[in-house]
Image 1 (cartoon, helix red, strand yellow):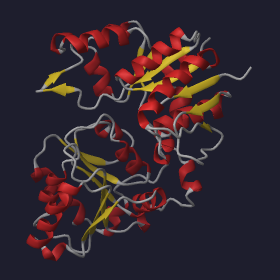
Image 2: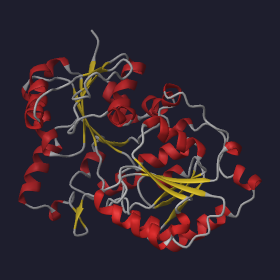
Image 3: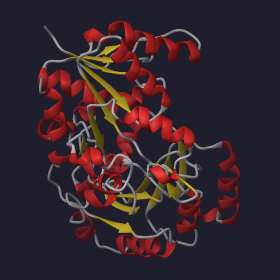
Image 4: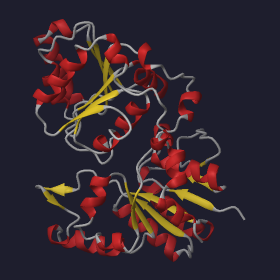
Length: 375
């Protein structure tokens, strides 16, 4: 009988998430281990390889209730219930699975981010209010396997309410990956480093507190870009458009060399990764920073704040991690890169394929995945 891995996301799954951890983990369980993969609450009409995409057509509140009810009704058919992050919605889903007679395993992928308040780590028991304590007490014992994305977050958990689960072999590290299949599906051929343009890009929710786009503009203001260009890619928050207009009014010389592209489709995004030489990230915090892994896979030199996977990626590629939110190290490193000769630029990052950051390699070799596969 075919085993089932079922992913229920807290939010509606748009197609972009099929190529991230919600879709890719389910897909590779299907490809490598013969599971039937099911994604819950997808876009109507969407197809993602051989994964089953379930669709709802009701009000958001009713969809949440239906998701929980579906898990309860079909619990006995689900061998792995795969959820992401610690939220009440997932607590209800796990309880529905247990009360519905589910005999398989619950896998929770932690997406911790900036899980803090006033600088205090809210995963530490003493920092929790009464309601958090009750929630975490109920939540903690339900998953069979937890994973975190980075070494930093794994070490952080050692001193939290969840720390004892590490010694119990219930928490492991599982980084996010890149799927090379996306290039073929988007009809993109990866460029050699020598054919790349003098292009710097950044990708994210432009204007959000997390992405710290103010620092990015501060870094760029006053720089002599020469024959280099900068493309800023991603949804632009309405309240940040004033900042962009102000930037151009103060620095009209950048209107042709610095471009805000807004949201782009996946093919266009990967085309920019393909053409660019440098990827710049100024985030205040990240749980993983998937865009950095994408940039490294597409042979970009990364310049980033010390967030998410940034430091670990330097084991496989080249870049510079800025230890603080200070613009000076960013400016100095950008100036250094832009002053390099063509030959020096062409040797800036390795040409080799980095299999260690691909989903297939990660799913094949990760200890948490192997434990999930055991009966």
